[in-house]
Amino acid sequence: MKKQQLSLTHIVFGAVMAAMVYVVTLFRFPFLGSKVHLANAVCLLSGMLLGPVPGGVAAGLGSALYDAFTGYDVINVLITFVSKFAMAWVCGRLLGSAVVSLRRADRTVIASIVGALTYVLLYMLKTFIYQRYVYAFPMDAVGATLVSKLIPSLINALAAVIAAPVFYHAVVPALKASGLLRRLQSPEA
Image (cartoon, rainbow, N blue to C red):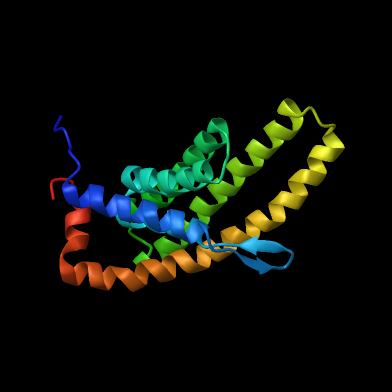
């Protein structure tokens, strides 16, 4: 079995994507009683451009750093890392899969939808566990909290599903022209 190594290109591009996730998380826009941000779109974009594992690391690291610098405890920082990693991993994995019958544009949308829903599911699971077992709230209070958090989560997921494929198809031509896309898709680059 051939051992794959990350190139300097992968490391630098991953660091740039992690920084982008962090910075984009700072900007939130009020919408329908919620706050929408495009950090999830950049997490999905990380998975699309870098692939499942490096993209997941970039997405998870950028989001975890945001949580760490805004005062969250270590457990929440780790949960954020895992859930954002999973979102980008699923997206990158689906986009890279050999679904021959679908065009690349269709795969970006499907990968974005499944990746975003993966994050929503993990976030709802975390909320349920915290509300029910850490804080010991009764089930009716837990249900109300889940509903109140599900709506903004779905709004953010929808924003990410719309924005991530647009971002991807906007940057791919420039990455192709510069030769970076080929280097990112080649583990030995």
